Amino acid sequence: MSYTKMEYLLFFLPIVLVLYQFCPKKHRDKVLLLASYVFFFSISHFLIAYILAATVVTHFCAKLLGKYADAENPSGKWTPGEREKKKKLIYSVAIILLFGTLLVLKYRNFFVFNVGTVVNLLGGKVDIQPVKLLTPVGISFYTLEAVGYLLEVKWGRAKAYSSFWKTALFLCFFPKVMEGPICRCTDWDWEHAEYKDLEHENLKQGMIRIFWGLFKKFVIADRLAIQVGFIYDNYQIYHGAMIAFAAVAYTIQLYMEFSGVMDVVLGSAQLFGIVLPENFRQPFFARNATEFWQRWHITLGVWLKNYVFYPVSVSSAVKKWNQFGRKKVGRFWTKFGTSAMALFPVWLFNGLWHGPQWNYIFYGMYYFVILLIEVALESNWRKWMKKINVDMKAGWYRVGQGIRLLLIVFTGEMFFRADSMETGIAMFTSMFRDFNPAQLGGGALAHLGIDKLDIAVVSIGILIVLIVDVIREKGTITFEWLNRRPVVFRWSVYYTLILMVILFGAYGEGYRTIDLIYAGF
Image (cartoon, rainbow, N blue to C red; front, side):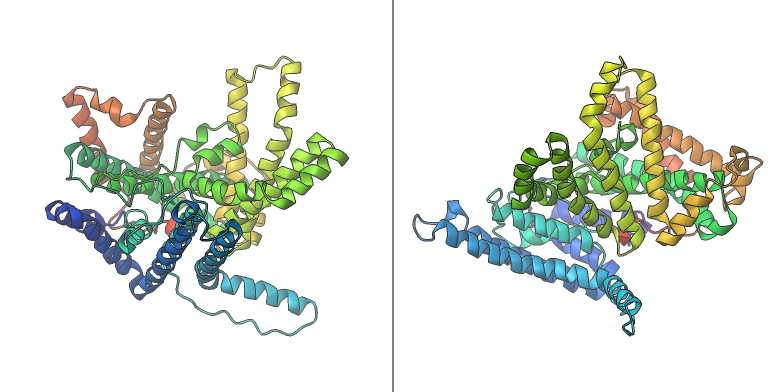
């Protein structure tokens, strides 16, 4: 069962809604928790033990951390130094258990293989045998949520949940446990939520958002997945414009898939009156790579900013560098070094978080270099543009920025999608061999697993999403705008969307099931 399967949409979700509505308010959180564990068990079976263990560790360590918080201690019972030592010990134990489990299950073979390879290259003899370890769905997501929650309690910015069930629901709430968004404990008041009755407006907007997500997933992403897979599986026989098309098509597929599933996730939560944080905000309207990552997978970026970037920025190592740099190397190189020290762990973590492959690490380092260059040159670039009288708000300049950003994103996603670093390099180099846009003509795209009708459906679907994103970028909230339209127009839009999903969705005979991309992370 997953968010776009009929088992979830037609059976599981409606049953949970009915049980939730007819259950007394004081027990509705238990209904959602039970539903979450049923959902998790349906996907990972006995591996549910891992999230249960993570919940136990998180809850009791958070309670212990709260015990030593300043506001909860009688004056003079512990000195500030004693309190910090106890909190550091508790947090360290929790981190070792939570991240240790993630590292063993997800990264053990990758690190063992690479260490063994290095040893063998140096003359040693190590027999490297991979160990097959089953990994529960969503472990990367709920682990980050648990660690972030513990840090918030440790820093005194949040209180530990009083009930084990609150902690469990925070980590395992079924709409977000599979693909996120990565929530902070402050994103929704899991402790004091009232769990009100189902409301008509929430049900309406939640269902429309679910269908909007299904439209992006079934009509666009799943068709593009066939073409993208065809080229990537046979990349040796393609070159030039066909490789460039694969990179562009995969980027669109990934956006439609991930943002579409997020629409289903947020719509599912909204049915119950629960507002989860947004994960996308028209990323392709960004002006540069830095802004792109403020709009793409927003909750991962917020997590990395709060719990990696900021702590590193105020660390003793960075402070020492700033003191040294101001005296020895000047303002520019001091800022450059500080940015490098803070950004490197962020993007190394980002790359590794996606999976134990070198192309993911390269993907992280790729954006580390690009964002570091942007940070380093931003101030001087603006001064230079002003000096030569270039209007950076002019339309032509914004178009140039957009083209540059798209080239950066398409290139990064080419390596991200590749099965290995070698595949990514081979595709990137072959893209420049005999590049000719005419390679895409003559019905070439219709020989990549889908026909001309499919291509037309995809093109129209992309155009519709683009129009909606333009409206949102201009500051209009789509649902509020629709609610102000006449009832006939409003419901015509709703039914058209529903019918398009039903009539043009890529499912049934002739289409293979496309797994959710980010569920694998």
